[in-house]
Length: 463
Image 1 (cartoon, rainbow, N blue to C red):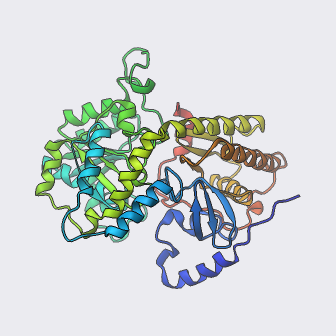
Image 2 (cartoon, rainbow, N blue to C red):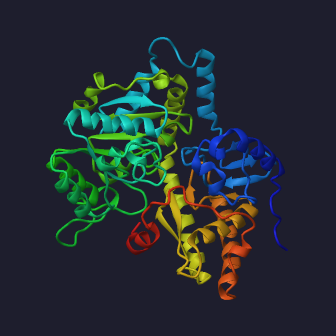
Image 3 (spheres, helix red, strand yellow):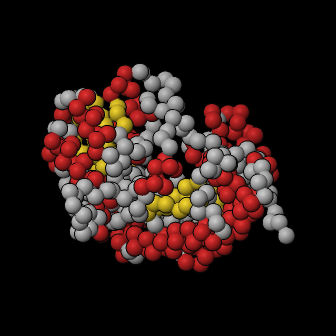
């Protein structure tokens, strides 16, 4: 018996109002209708608890999007909620500074290897912007080498196809390099001699940093990473060319390890940025780093009304100790390995390993799709998303696991994956039109000017 399509009548009714008054219909592209099968998927969520959410039509879903990844403890975590409510009773934003600024800074210094000082923002783009400004201020240079996604500011978005309204000179100042390819980074330094202020990069996303030993080595770094890994070589190269190394740990911070990817890989950057998991999705971000660079913030402008807002700081003060107390990073690794291994075994059992694969680190794995020139990758993603939603799982091709995701949730997810793979295998074996099986509008990419990650990660992923 075919499972029913969810009733989304109220979702659609609300969206009909939004389209008239909200440009693009959503505040965040990745939460909007282009990222979920329009006409089938819910559009508005009403509440969440633990690893589950309920939409405005009261459909219940096991969530793997988790607010675009900041919800590391779970929705409505009681300890974080209590801290926030208590602070609200005292006040949220004051006319003078608040002691929470020092309390949370001291926590960050204690946990994060590069942290000798900290300043706070409200989202990742805030602190990535000021990190680059600090690097430019300290070095007197303008150019940037980057790897990964870093936010909506001009220097990054200038080189995407959503760059309307951004002055063209930004494209000449920001240069993308490829993860695990030192030559691609050195070309930037050589082409822009004495002009590159910083290297800003996501230290861990999908790929494991490659070994750069001259001979085969025993992985003698922290947590089995080679000591001479790609990140350590990037650091050496950046310093050799007089640039500052910035780790964008907006996603990796607290999720991969309590001290971030820098603790896990044993590579300490000059500056680092954190957000998302720092406060279990109560808005807060931080730039941390060595005092010699952070001290420039005394005369490099970074100031706004909500910079010292106490709600996010109170949430972080409750969240960070709980992450340590409950060994949340360890839990994510355990359940993540179970999910990743289970998915790939199912794909093998169904004979679909050429089409779908779970890749990346267990704490935040990603499903890679390859249509093999037979199917459109995004249509495969759309079909999987549709059928998972039908089975009560909210999913956007990645698993943003939280402390609230328990083994029973993973078992439920693997059962759903097993069923969906069976349906997709039938489509493949019978050479059916996949588009006709999608009961709405397929998902679209946020950026169209992007690298072909699927083929690269399938070939090189070692995690």
